[in-house]
Length: 224
Length: 146
Image (cartoon, rainbow over all chains, first blue to last red; front, side):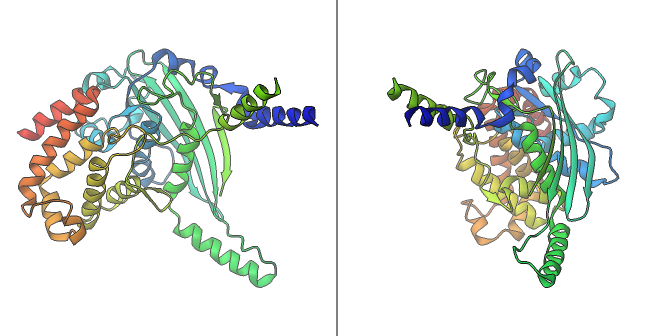
């Protein structure tokens, strides 16, 4: 009985995080630890969709997850005014260029670029595909790169059966989908992208999280 | 031996997927996200005098009652709030549109003068909390002083 108990307890520990146990933050993001940026500048997103509003909306949602990961993030709302005044609001012009000007002007150690590849309401849900690239403002190399292809399922399931229930569910799903803003899906994508980023200097886990589990670089999720 | 193994395994199990405590307080939650993000997004999307008042109230709450494990306002918040207060239209919008409970946050009726002083203080606070911000904030202070 004791042996059986210990066996199950060990099995629970080993399987508790599933596939996340296979990768560590250090193996996924070695250059983050090598460079360890303290200050990050968020560049306006690069929008590859026809939804013009996506760029500005995503821009307001990037700083919180990075701040919570322990980084000093230059306020995007303030940086935006400066970038616009300096004609630097189009990130496409800078993603493949030296980033020293951002280090000199903002004191940034790293610059984060985001690329929106999908931002669409489909059926009863929202599809979002966002890529993030963090580049060192000192060496210009890519130190973090990840994408999230997320489907936010907004279908309503009443738990009842029958034709009338199905009709009500269809109507409710349509209303919920119409009323839900795209940014909700984008925030969920941000959560998955940044949840296992190496922790920055304001986190108690700073330089102690190399062995912490990490997910695959490219994430595909369907969430409710 | 079993007395040691069982607690060790139990601790490992509980810590393997532990929930991290937030570092900062973001004004509470609203519509499934933080109040700050929600109001910043709303204000950015369609800024109205009312959205400015709501934003001022949540910023004030975040800088005067910081929470999370670090107990300081999040990065950039003092600077954003200070910058907002220094915009001349903010005081006018607040005086004309703030609710009574929002107005009670400040012990003054002269919002124009008070917001100017407080705005400058907050930009300095950003540097105090986050010294690495000096490179960006100091030129901003000088620019706003002109």
